[in-house]
Length: 447
Image (cartoon, rainbow, N blue to C red; front, side):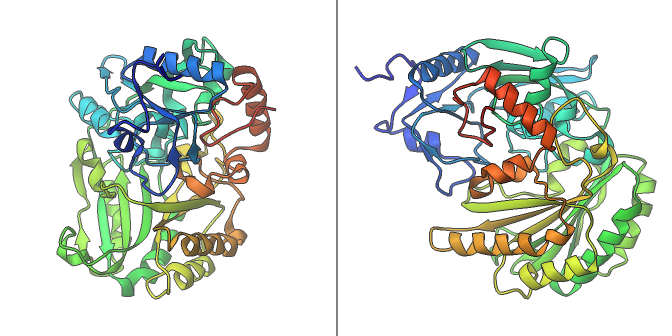
């Protein structure tokens, strides 16, 4: 009998199911646990955490596997993808969901009542992990981070106890859970606020390569004076020439402007006009849409892929910064990657009773490169070079949601928080997880 026989849902490396269990959306390196626990409920999670803690084993958690924060070598990987319960309380305007739920399920369930969650750009991202890292979505400038609107968290802590944590029952732990990733336990369920947004004025504007500089320049000036109802971003995307893509985008390096206006559609139409005035669009899908179609704004890839990524919070972006980005990663650059700049401010800049940091930033710049073993080093070198060249505009901060793999290093994780908050998180970590059982994540070590 092996040592993992006490785990009724254990899947070992010798099991034919093991490879599928450790795979996720991010397929580049990173997962070689001793055992996978295929959790179907909170009790499976509790038993797994208790088992690991008694043996000094590290615990990792995987829902959908988008942002693998640390290499998993050994230890216990708790797979929560089977935990798919969703409940909507229309009267209280809340949603409760289990650890394996994707945002798309919450969006569709809430839409039946004319409500919307603060979901991310990709409907196939795990709702719990996204929210634990802050959560920056299409309603962000109006309502703030997803972590700003967490009612309750059900979590198994390192002592093997299943707890229900609210701001009233345990304000310090609730403060830490909303923004500190998985450092304090394995979340089994979460209750969040919903908002009366049955539809929004949103969609995408795609511009061809020769228009990219004008698009970036116009967009950054346009963002200087916008109401909180308007949330937007712009991405530079080198599309491959494949039949799966819409014909206008195939083989083109485009500027993709993402629009989400949670207010009067006529006002949204007026606000978008300066962007449309840049010139002809390859595709213009900006319209009044039901919130259940919000995933079409970014049209994020749904097929698993290997990639490396990093990000930086910016104080501002100007013509000089745009020139650097275009020289290094624009349509004419020798190396290509996806570049995205998200507009912050609005409700995101307001204080909240959680540890999400860098609320003074005006933008977040993200880089994402598809790689394999032969190209990963070059991609990381390029991304580091871009970030180094952008230091003049950077606050020095990072966005936790967009740190994964090599970028989820101790220095960048620390930079996701305001300094006093990081120190307090370390103190709380000493209380709730003194042996750092939950360290295969965006790790905050105990004080």
